[in-house]
Image (cartoon, rainbow, N blue to C red; front, side, top):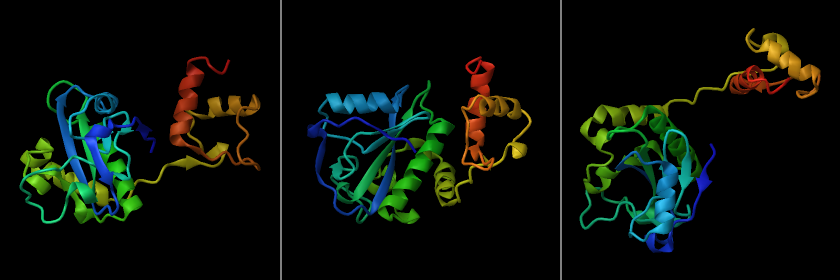
Length: 218
């Protein structure tokens, strides 16, 4: 997935992160915020707190460098025996809309990011935890107050990602896409992989058709 970056202010994070064992899920609890404005804020201000990633329904922004310790689970007392800033990645979910509500797209994008981080660092699913599980803080509140939402999140992590639908040949494509694809092939804009193999994803077909209907292809 695409991850944009804006360097966090050096006053908001610590030393080298050498051995990632946990991924900690948070929410920002700031009504109407976005991943980008969190990245901007932590780049600009010194608040002695941070996270590695901020996620909303549209984007993911990296703030603290992945090889440095974010200050996201610091506490005087812990309820988790071993998860600390020094061995964990912090992921914050944003609240882009009105009200203190996590949008479905934000949760789904967070699942995708966390799954990629699990693969990157070899973190098992049992080591994906809530802030609440580490320090007892009510965070992310919806996942604490309604534990079934957390169960659903973990189940989504464990599920096999759906394989993207792809169309190798023109004849295999849905009827709604054929006129546009035929036009682009005739114009020389689509050449594929040779021998008639186009190998286009369904998302690509939708983009081509929308652009065609907007008159971008003549």
